[in-house]
Image (cartoon, rainbow, N blue to C red; front, side):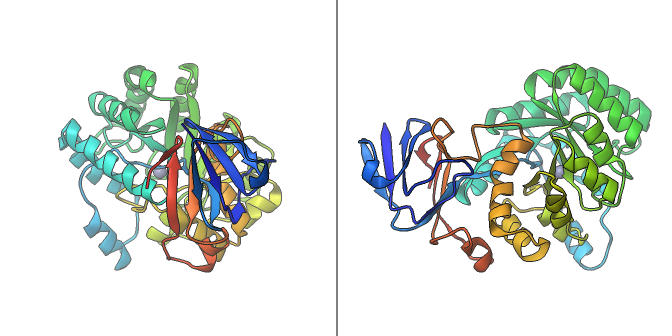
Length: 377
Ligand SMILES: [Zn+2]
């Protein structure tokens, strides 16, 4: 089954190909170019001058959870500070939930994201924090998400000794979860795991063949970025507080700086120094960090709008960061891009250009979405 899409007002490909038309064949893009040269296809869709871009690649979410943290959010907006400890609330609810309940929460949020143009999504464990609950979180995530990350080192469970818990995470827990995931991640932050503990977990994960990611520099300058670059992590996420040495280290590495502006807004932190990172030559991704505690949005468009209006990124930079940047943070070359051979993940805007994502903040601009060559809405 092939589909020719014509009438594209502005085509963002993140690749060398250009045009006003493209052909989807099965689950892949087969051709991109000008409509007058288009090959025959089984079906034709005219998007009537709308902008087309790759589907959002959301490279950072925490969607295997149960429970609700509305009250904590409300209290925070009333002036109570954010701490890493709130995660424990979600851990208790997640442990108490059935597999079906967890799968349903994940399904609902992936569907919500897809409707808004997110066609590729990473999600993490990290609300189980014991062997059995981390394993089932990974299993449930792997059934639905495009990429899965093991985040046993999200928080030391309340009442447990940190070093004993780190030994569990890098030992028995990692052994049990590793076959189900591609990535391992650590929350390297004051109140969570320090440099040595984080490094021990990540090195054990690397020895198991997992790719590395780090939550770092969210609540203050800390060792997260340094550790991520040192270990060749694919991404270090948050990067809200960076020293100039951190910026330089990212700029001269393959580690993507994944910025999570919805989280910074929802915790009333500063926004990350995107301009400094880009000007230094670092690779920047944008992701939602969708989770019930610190960033309860699945809207990549909101992240893009914020990056443009408040973080001094250009529209083109922000859209790249939320598509190709996310793909690079997950070391994928088949998504976040429109070119022959890439996954047919398309986002059609109800607007003539991507500029409208920031020009019309808050307005839902998703017209239609294709995922793996299938019309999703
Ligand atoms: Zn996170």
